Length: 345
Image (cartoon, rainbow, N blue to C red; front, top):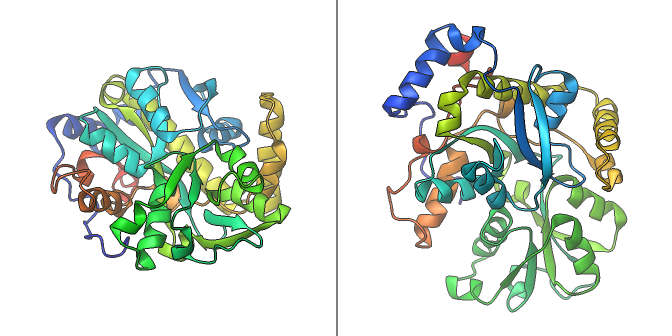
């Protein structure tokens, strides 16, 4: 499904006047690079037992003089980006398909950097209990599958797995998706309250290490390496704070590359230190299962296909109309230092 989506050339976007003005500041003028950040504190929501790349960036000193202000944890990407739209936080992150839906609903937002993805070492997987009678896609008919958020990335991956196995749309209606926090899904599976669960990155790897579960497939096996979640700001925030956004993206991008290029044990030690110092009463042992940066593009660069895949999915199942949303309406790489057009100026 991912590879059959139409290929859109990155960067051939017809930006609106607003984005043209912002782009001229970032790409061709020096003010956006020379001026200090307009806002020195960014409110955000965290994830239990995870260190986000902005958190790592702050710890590495890449965000200075900007400070992050944690306002609580979320278990839902859609909730996180909605909080950004309403102004409860300054930035939010979610599955790219959820961002597509938000833009389709005319929310004035722009995705600026990818922060979650899949690669050979870091990926999400669909699990059943060891000894379960479920051995393949068709065995899931009539069963309950646990995901963190209905209609988001994990449900998309399970749906793709089922469709690749030849199941029809009518077959898909026979599967019940159940929402639960990622840290609780494994327990619900072990208690047999769920028949299968989808877990992402290090939480998945912890379940594998603990034993007792069988892996049916992974997102990497289905589609290879790609980014599937991005951070966004509102258009208004970007217009009022372009240097703050640039610094945020720059620091987060550098943190991603630091994690990609630093020895594994050093990265894990740093993540454990961050979790220990923030005192959020969370399971720090999950950090031990960190394997790789797990982000598609260098420094979190976004590819058009990171959104067209889900646009096509929503069009095919009737959620969106053809042409209702275009990738250039959704994201911009213009603040990312690893964007060649930015680095050239």
